[in-house]
Length: 170
Image (cartoon, rainbow, N blue to C red; front, side, top):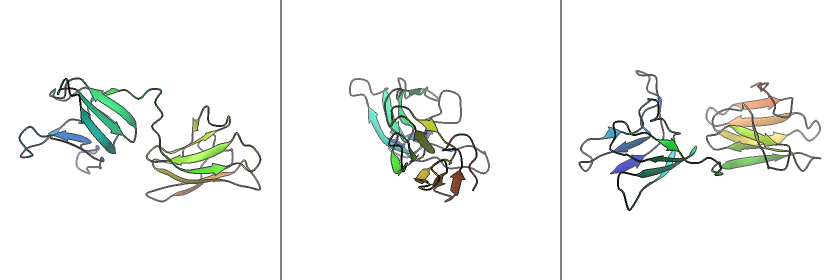
């Protein structure tokens, strides 16, 4: 049995707790497949888990941060490889449009901050609005000013350089 979930902060240990766990005895005991060790880390907020039908030791995981795979699910801990390079897996929850430039827009992404593009979406630059990007906007009167907010903790931010740099002021 495999369970994927969201990480949470553990005040005693100071790290994010399980993202994927496994039970080999019907749920009586659980094994953390993603402890905070090099090679076993993966992005949280697991949305799906699948097992290779030809090799039950190969497990694939889809999360808010992309696609992950282990070739040895029984290892302690398993080595997870990121398999999402070149695969668009980010979920935009909002887009702010520029009033004059159709090639510029800014967006907030689920669990992946905010980003903007100046070439109509061919390439993106990350901004520093925070973990869970949410609503974004371009000031219609002064387009170099952009706004973004995150959830939680529901922080409202302003950047006066079109999203470039770390000039967000909450």
